Amino acid sequence: MAGATAASAAGVTASQAGLITVNLTHNFISATGGNHLNADLTGDGQADITIANAAFGVAYRTTSSGYRYIQTLQARVTLNGVLASAYVTHYPLVFLRIGSHFTGATNPAYPRIFERDGVYRAKGPT
Image (cartoon, rainbow, N blue to C red):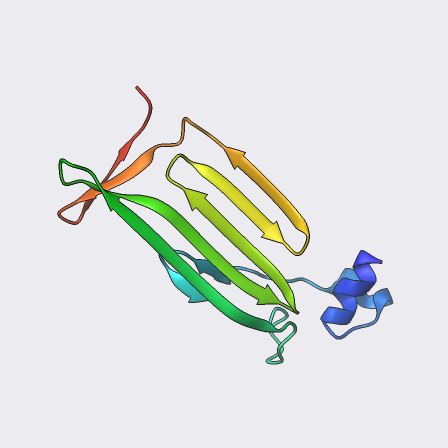
């Protein structure tokens, strides 16, 4: 059924589903890099999915010593009426959701990114 759904989304029959290659290179939404989503997944000049309500953001916090670090990153979009979102905190905690599917993870070894005077530095656990 998943193959038929993917095939119908691309405008072909289920028997042709094995012939489709979807290139997602440079097709993304980023909290710091903006919206680079393209609804034409097959390269034929026609929209293959509906993309709506794309939003992204980043929140910073400044330490008492003047360093600014990324506190949260978030991105969300509606794809064919289904909400997809990502939320990352500085801890770091990562939460991902698409429709009713949800997952979260943490990695304490992941470095925190600090910025001061336009220079970014990573500080990991010691």
